[in-house]
Length: 476
Image (cartoon, rainbow, N blue to C red):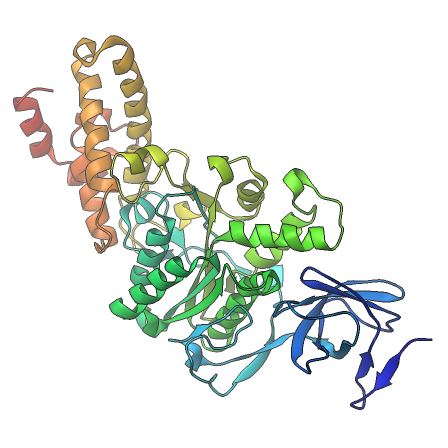
């Protein structure tokens, strides 16, 4: 017979914990327990710990302990479920605060009074209610703004590698990004998963020192925190974002770093549940799980606010075909790839512009949004740089002196493009106009008849003939 103890009216308690396995507990002889339902487990020490159901069967339930199972025995523990999913207290006063993955304060201050309680799992937008993203976000980083413009309501991830400066880039974008004309209604939700202590201190010190924390909510999960909390961290961040966007009309940029740490936690949790592994040991439902995070993004009809996502992930062994970047690429609208070779040459941010793509950029740039030449200059830069890389490879085989003067001009263009356009200071913020002006300075290293992607009327207005003539005078 089940050891069921009636405690609070309407809430049933179970003292039938069969097993504590990693971050999970297995409860036998349950009745009516639902997936994602929350509750608490109380051990012999009397300390309550929050739990969330991750698997249900005919006569059992498996729950993850959100604060860890260290020191929690199966014998003598009691579990009670609340009959609801996890709801988070949210408020506009969360701006400027530092929280943990469960939404509890990390900065030593109490939570502000709740204005709403929202389901941490979110409420997906009705596809009919979605509006097409077509308004740009200015990040202040030329390689993003000029070539792969971020669009309000877009999901645009960064594919990085171990040792590359994705943390610096995340901090720079969090500090600089804005929607022009809506600066007062722009907010950042910065969710960090599985960070080392020194990385967490870097972000905290950077945001506090530069004043960026005033318009930012930081949801911080450390590597030493329970993996169950790591699973909650992006959902906590997105719940705050949804409140600010849909209830308070903010334009919200959600930065998620590092999604690889999230995927590793998902794999560990799946292994603890005894599930059959999929590709490289990750659960077969990882695509669906990623979608529950990434798809909480967009613009909605009748709503002034919006949610844009900027997930960052490190590719294991720099393998872009690894399941984490592979599945992310299927769900999101493009990717920004960091280059180890450019980083080795001292270029920051080291964007591989040939591998990078923003699928929504074409509808978010142009007259009235950025500038009328934006689309053409971006296409020309990428086309010319692609040819320049081919010329570089040719020069390695035949020598630079055996190249034609046009080919040598492409080598000069590639050097200028990397050193002047892609490369910029960590504290240097460029507007759209400044980015495009630098682009024309770089393009004008080439002869004007090489600008095959630019209409003649655009070229006539922006091409810097003086730059080409000065280079021509001293030789190619």
